[in-house]
Length: 287
Image (cartoon, rainbow, N blue to C red; front, side, top):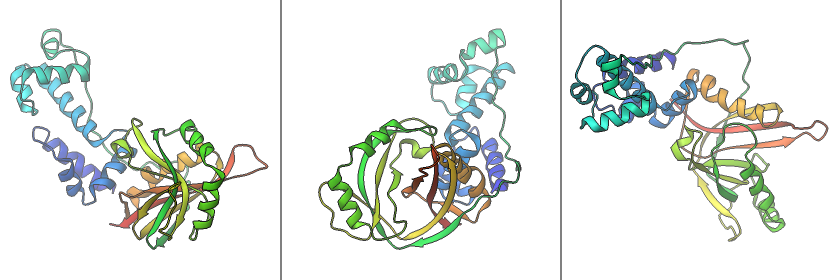
C-alpha cells in the first residue's frame, strides 16, 4: 500500500488549489475511505484533512514570499474571503499574511513521502477468524480518547459492574473468545485524534438476543477478524501492538479495516506485576 499512499500524496499536490474530497482521495487510493484515513493517520500522525490544510498553508506562505497578493492567494487555495484566509493562516503560522510580505516571515510544511523502514525485523503474530453475527453485551460508558497509559475512566467503568451484571454476562457468553472483552466504537474523529470521546464497553460475545435492562446490547454483523496475540508489560504492549497493526501490518496486508467495533481481552499474570497476555480483534475484509 506504500505505493498507493505516495501516489495519493502526488495527487494531493496536483490538486491543492481544488476542493479536495476526502472520499475521492480514498477512492483514488483504491481502498475504503475508513481504512485509508486510519492507515494514513497511524503512519503520518496527522489526519488527512490536517495534512491537506498544512500543505495548502505552506504553499500559500511561499506564494506570499514570492510577492503574490493576499487576495489572489486566498482565492487560489479555496477561501471565499480575505478575512477567512487571514484567520486560518494566522492560526496555522502564528502571523498574518501581510507580515509575510512585509517582514519575510515564513513557515513551511514539506510534502510527505512514505518509505519502508525495517526496524529489527520483529515478527508480528496474527491469525484470521471468521465469525457469525453476534451481540456485544455488557456495560458501556463514553470515555475520553487516550492512546497511551491506563484510562482511569475505563477503570471506573470496570469497578461499577455489579455482581448481578457479571452473573448475567457469564450466563449469556456462548462464543469465542470466552473472555471478558473491552470493545471500543462510536469514537469522535473515528479514532484519528487523541481528542474527544469514544464508547467503551466491558462485556462478552453472545448469540443470545434476550438481555435484561441492566445490560446493553450492540449487534455486530458476521465478518472477518484479524487477531493479534501479544504478551508483555500492560498496557504498553497492548497499545504498541495496536499501533503496529495500523502502521506496519495493514499497509502491507491483503486486508483493510472496516467500521465495526474492535475489541480486546487481557489476562493478567498473577506472578508478574503489570504483565499480561492480550488479544486484539480487528474487523477486516479483503481488499
